[in-house]
Length: 283
Image (tube, rainbow, N blue to C red; front, side, top):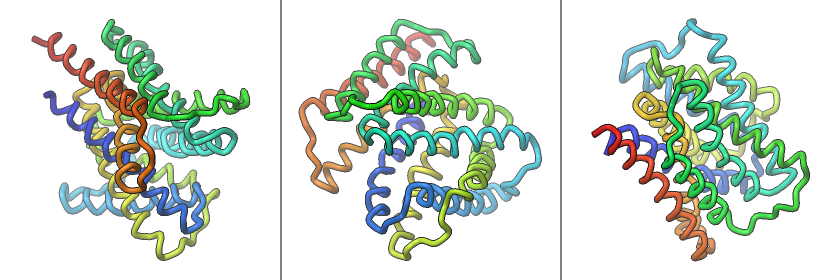
């Protein structure tokens, strides 16, 4: 298996732990913006230390500051603002469902920006992914406002834009530094909306949130984009909600229905399909 696909799978698996950590953090009364702020802050500390010790480099750079400002505004602040607002005016299931319209946008953006071909297996994989996420999301209430529909689709579009910006970012820069600068600007945009005090009991879970789905998840994904098309990476990354429902079943005893299992199988099948077809295309 191509290394890039393994990295995407691992990164998506890390992102699948996000809901687990968030569940514990919310029990301490931490609001969403504050949770994301400290998630980014702690991830910056971990990432900066990692870059300094492992690569013996300064994690800061003065080059392309405008790019990182846009990246942080869109990929960190914009994504989470729209996502949490969609949750507020609709439901978690509906917001998650529309986030995973991202692969469809990624296929189109990959074609327009990077000239990535739109192949029949990508089309089939997209259908499998969208149906799979719909089943995995469970009983989604579609009785929502037009505004929720717009903000939900916008969240999926921004999620796709994140991959495009990451692809540009890692072309000539170390993926870890790209992530560091992006998170740094994201933190600056988040600060005015966040509280700067948190219960001490929430700190271990915030550290876990910063390390696994943030530091590991995004570092692995940025490395993967050096080797994998944006469109294919976005499809494989939809393994995230499958990991999330399995962890919720194991840790919290949440119900895991046959339809959710079938949806998960469709998502995994789509991931395998795009990988196998690319491998055959290269032989």
